[in-house]
Image (cartoon, rainbow over all chains, first blue to last red; front, side):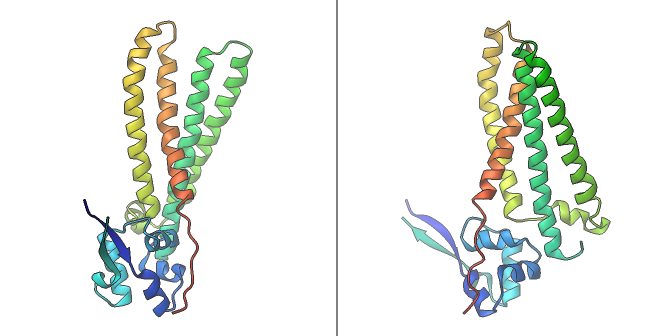
Length: 71
Length: 156
């Protein structure tokens, strides 16, 4: 059975926008821990947080989050 | 406390304080259960320990209510109480685990309480309360302890 994992490119976008986790947290109104745990895949964000991230980086949600197959 | 992040960080701290208060109540219930079976002079020490943990739990609860909740502006309280994030999600997981463990313990303790009729029912009640709240708060702290990560590089 194939399982899917949620991957994200927040670290890449953060680097492009030269933002620290605290800066990003401040701008979308969540705690820094929420950002750090999303980045490492420990926390799957709600639709609201995903959309806030996409809006902040000015890209569609699919460019930040993607599903990848894992065996 | 009007910045969104300050509100989010405060919401996270609120959950930590709640878990701390519940851990203290779990300790109080555990001591209370032990006091049911203990004999003097141990019971005297347990009574003091129970009172100390009860006062500590009350202090944390009052701190939570007055200094963490009351200082949030009224128009932000609804948002404060429904703040999303990693810590809010771990509190839900800890509640689920606590409920599961309590349910299993109930199925074991119910027949045990009928078998050991010399043990007062209060012992089983206090033990169950200690287990329920203890599992919740310990699970919450463990899940959060392993959730802290370094900020990482920001260079492109």
